[in-house]
Amino acid sequence: MKRLRLSIVYAGAISIGATLASPTPLRAQDTRWITTGIGPRSGHAMAHDSARGVTVLFGGADGGISSIFLGDTWEWDGTGWQRREATGPAARAGHAMAYDAVRGVTVLFGGTRTGGSLSDTREWDGTSWALRATTGPAARAYHAMIFDAARGVTVLFGGRASNQTAFADTWEWNGTTWTQRATVGPPARYAHAMAFDSARGAIVLFGGHEHYSNSYFSDTWEWNGTTWTQRATAGPAGRYSHDIAYDAAHGVSVLFGGYRATTPSILGDTWEWDGVSWTQRVVTGPSPRNGHKLAYDAAQGAILLFGGYYAPGDTWKWDGAAWTLLATTGPSPRLGSALVHDGERERTLLFGGYHRGIEFGDTWEWDGTSWSPRSVNGPPGRDCHAMVYDAARGVTVLFGGYNSGCLGDTWEWNGAEWTHRDVVGPSARQLHAMAYDARRGVTVLFGGVDSGNCSFWDTWEWDGTGWTQRVVTGPSARWGHAMVFDVARGVTVLFGGLSSPYIVGDTWEWDGNEWTQRTVAGPSPRCNHAMAYDGSRQVAVLFGGAINSINNLGDTWEWNGTAWQQRAAAERRRDTCTR
Image 1 (cartoon, rainbow, N blue to C red):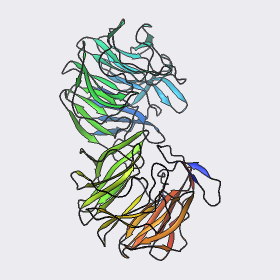
Image 2: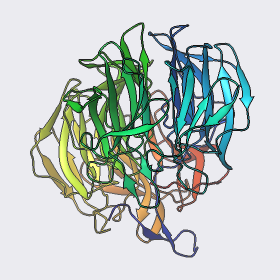
Image 3: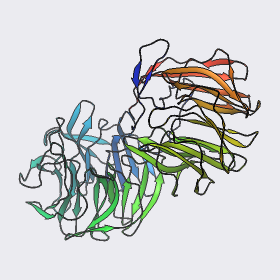
Image 4: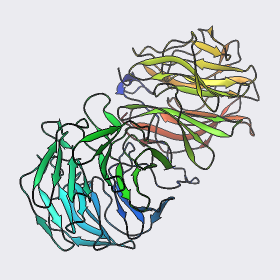
């Protein structure tokens, strides 16, 4: 069972088969989120402007649940990304760009957006975008395009129409008009990649996808300006949504990543084509991804990589020998991750999460200004786990979660490395809750659900050495509840959750010996809400939650140990959240 689909009854409503996930918070009227730098994305396009010494990036999709199309223009100057505030093409993804070194402009063609594929030709001169043509190749996306410096034309091959039909046509743009060239060449495909080998005067094409036969190509072709010639069938595994760039300093075309049908489906391998054969470079580097882009920076003699699907908004450099991380904007879009603040080191730690078939096992830290990936070995990828910070021992404790089944392992992060604590403890579960009891120096765990949809009502405590089961009486079995430790009163507060088949709205407190239900009026029943303790005002703060698969809440409540008080109201929002 991949995700929970349980019957839910709320306020006498009809049972609803629902997939519940962390809700999307509502936008508060008096709060603004701060975004710094270029965001994670895939399906964007890049080209290096050699005259101005910058790499140009346009558009793509944000990679989030909604896959919002982007229409922003950015340039990388070798140090950082700068947004160019220019009116330009409509937001899109799956378009292609190439730098025309003869005319000193970056050429963009096609792509897809809400409503279908596009067929416009536009050019960026470093200051503004200009629409150059609306006739030429048929509307398409996920085609490949490269500038042939020997002949002074931009070459386009393949792509996919709005009706999913793949193309096998070759076109050239001379700066004024498009001309269709060869009709015989590689089979129809899309999401392939091309690079121009300046030493041999040939365009190299590799891979791609043919939709209807579900074929992932592994063939290598070259275009000499007149004809296509198949060069090799051995080399990288068949794939699509990878990218290639020609490394002029080393005389090879470099390929990275992509997607294939077999496990692992998301690739992170590096290959080089020297005109005769492919060689795999066994190196560490960017995380596996597809939908990323490569561009060769001649001034630095290195290939630049940015973004990708299942990837953060990171920027890497390949110098022919090794990959180097140059910049990152933060973790890639995801659900079900865990976040906790390390008070001693003044860092916020994020681990794991889930996005479209992938459970992440990456560790990130936020220092108040930027995210930094921690390249460490640690827990296997997962989501729906729980983490708390143990202030007495200065470690973050992680337990459980989900990856192809529920997990029951215990890990600790000391700020430098993860340690697997090989101990017997709670049974494997997900969507449980944990809180750190600062008065007694223990981590308290309650509830959760296993792979068979059986929810728990057991209470456990972790003292840094072992787990101890405390009681089995107390709140009903549940998952998707929230807990927080009330420092002033020395109790752990629990609210809500899904106690099958009902969503509940009860309040409980754990004093280290027993659970006590507080019979009080308060927030409406909900699950997958969030709670935190405000030490300055000595209240537990609750926000949001879900009442079924499409209705999320955005109200704010506070618990002072005696009563709940609603502090801010928000209208109910209908949202779907596919995990």
